[in-house]
Amino acid sequence: MLNRLQRARGFVLLSFLPTVFFWGCDVLNPKDIPDSAVYTPHPYLIGVFFVIQVALQIYWISRLFERRLRPPEQALLSPGLDDGFGVIQTTDTSDNDGEPSQMAYVPLYTAANFLLVGSMAAWKSDQVVISQICMALNAICQLYFIFFTLQPSGKFAWSHKNKITHLVAKTSLGIAVLYMWRAWGVMDIGSSRPPVQQKAHCGVFVLLLAFASGPDPTLGICLLLDLAALTAGHTTDGWRFAFSCIMGVLFVVVLSDALLAWKNRAPARMPVDAEAETSALQGGSEEIWLEDFTTPSPSDEEHAHLPERV
Picture 1 (cartoon, one colour):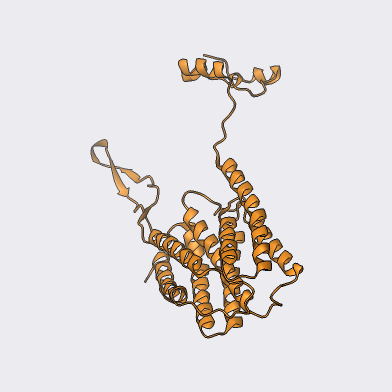
Picture 2 (picture 1 turned 30 degrees about the vertical axis):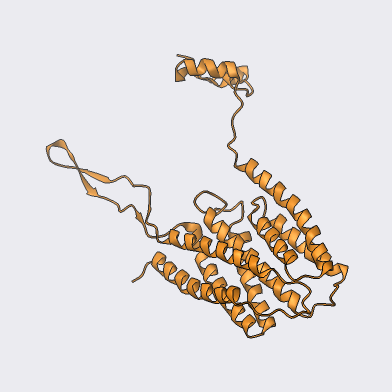
């Protein structure tokens, strides 16, 4: 009987391999874009995104196959002969549960990959609407995981152990948004010079998405790359100018998110008087008292309950 981690490995590989095949076919042999399209991403930049995303996913999958160790538990001891003690129970420190955020992502990762395969197959068959629906469902899977599972106040907030899961989920959402934009540009959404409302809606959508994913700037950077690909692609002048303006505003948002994230992750240090710190370090540990720190001193009543100095 396969355990949970082994089943997760199987589902991940089963969805990853066809995704790379269909996605690679789309990158290496792109479908001709009609001249009526108001915008389309640059094909070379799509190839760059493909390579980066596949490399991230390969590394993320390899983490599933690493042997993780649990913190060793204390063994149970029993009195033995000659007044000694014998170990009656030992624990296996190997972890068969996998990294928690990875295991939580596996179901949505698998579903999103199969939806991506369906979207690419429909795009090749000129079924643009079906392709767009599949890609929208893919984006919903990523959005749900990012904003409900990886939320900053949750147990899967950004940390050193789960940062690769954050990267894969957020870059996958960035790819989904880019392909949805590609389909929108091909579909009959307006004349060659769309109204101002459509450009404003596009800017509001991008900025709200970047704000909501903060203070981690990963998704904002992905959206910046999406806009750069659309600006460099086969795009009308009106939309190229709109994308450039949105990029400028989004860059400010991403920069502020990056500074805020760096500030939040910086280790906090309690303010200590330099003279008191030097004298405390020169003496023994028993000489470090609360009054040496720049915190309010205890009142007379509180001081009466404090232990006397030795």
